[in-house]
Length: 209
Image (cartoon, rainbow, N blue to C red; front, side):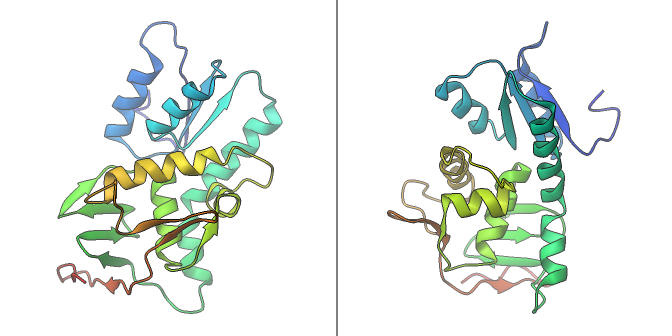
């Protein structure tokens, strides 16, 4: 059904009666980029981290209220339009594509490539990267990132930010153990390296810094 019909968002229960939900998730994540909200009855911290490591855009543990589910869905859908709204309200137009070293971010195509190879990012990972690179050099706390990128206006687990940042580094950094771009400011939060990123025109190759 997910393959046949175009959807704006997918709510996936990990506890499926036949095929394992994690298997379904991995298949769909490779084939499409729509936001995925994972549902699970497992409440352990390890299980939550595993779900986030898969690249899920959000997760909810059972039982939950319909009101919270609706709030999460609305937040995910708002983020799909996040980059466009930022561009429209910015005082100065931001280039549709920028390069930072061997990393190329295409905001129009919602696409990131490293060494000319396309990287498969979840919506949440892309939004986090886009938010930080557009504000490079500025440090954001975990709470601020939850509010600005995740769209949460209520208390949540800041470990979510750490996990997404960790897995984003695994994908966009040449040496994830010694990140060049996504930097940790000890005791504060995260920032994108304060270095000018080159705008990339549609008909030119990425400019390396």
